[in-house]
Image (cartoon, rainbow, N blue to C red):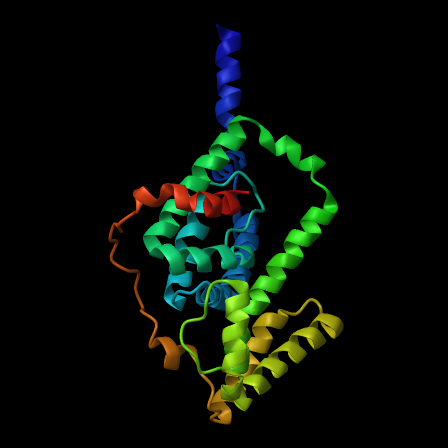
Length: 269
């Protein structure tokens, strides 16, 4: 009986949030100071990143901020790692964009629920051990494919094209781009080139500096100082709300579960 109780206790410890472990071992001023600096660094980077990824996913910037706040807190409070950082990731942009375009936000929530169930099942079946057999070229190809898809989704804003909703599919999207090339905005192209040049230059000569954030600040100052005719967050989406939204339980289209299984599988794995 004692052996069984010890085994059950060890099993439960595997699911214990690391936050409880840290407090149990002792948490002092030095740890708080280091964690506060790390948290501030992550917050500064996540602020523009969350909005950018939300816009790229076909939604509005404040939804990216809400997601970063709520998900980041839950991951940090309930996660099982001392050094895990919770935040938005560019890998989900193509999937989220497609799901929102075709099924709405309710479909995205259903996708997330299904993906969570898949991950729980994979964990119980210990499928993570199979990852060591995955060929490296598959990982490289997957990562490169994500990069191409993200690049494709940003052409409209990078060139300042005046067009309506961008198609979710790759080939129709590029067809629409070519049909609207005559609407290219020189100011948008100049800011795109300036931002890329700053990021690449800082990565080469000052790799420890937050290149993405500095490029964002410089481009924002240039746009404001020179009054360039380029779209901004404010001109496109209006003022960002200063408070968290009122919680509303959305309609979840459970009747479309079968259609959403492929996207859910992609999100999960």
